[in-house]
Length: 227
Image (tube, rainbow, N blue to C red; front, side, top):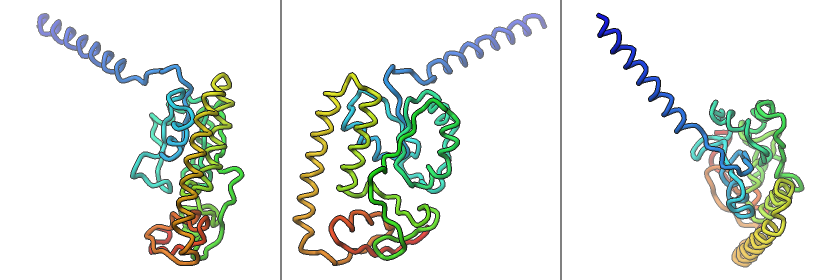
């Protein structure tokens, strides 16, 4: 009986040590870089193009998840407690529903809005559909689906990164200006290709190219509305 009891104690001790080792190895590692939270994957691309590996970015809404219905995990909210900054994209339903909770998780975290200075589209016509559960008061949230808007988003991102990393101003500016040059070049190419087709329409399932259509004077006709 005593031998059995001893074996149980030893096994319990080994299990405890194993659990401790696993928990230590799986704990999030602090890279020492400023941690930036964003809502959607395209935002990470903007930050990566300008800041390179100077910062660590984590995306709240994983690929394939709906911005209208996604709920953050406990792990994500825990990671937010270490973040220096949260850059919201503007009007996606996830932000409208969860931004209060995100802010309360880390009151010291700066929250900035990358949609500032963008001419927002409202309304329910063909070019700017109001789709319930995915927009706010008829606002189309897909601002990143436009090269014109992308320049504004990049500028807002650059300004926030300068505030976060003032000692890296020259590096950030060089990357930012190179990125803008690429966006300008793409815009010229699209304008040239699409100028003969102004006022013509295109068919799409989900109305995600409203701002793109505005940039090049096209009409967007969508099949799906409000899910």
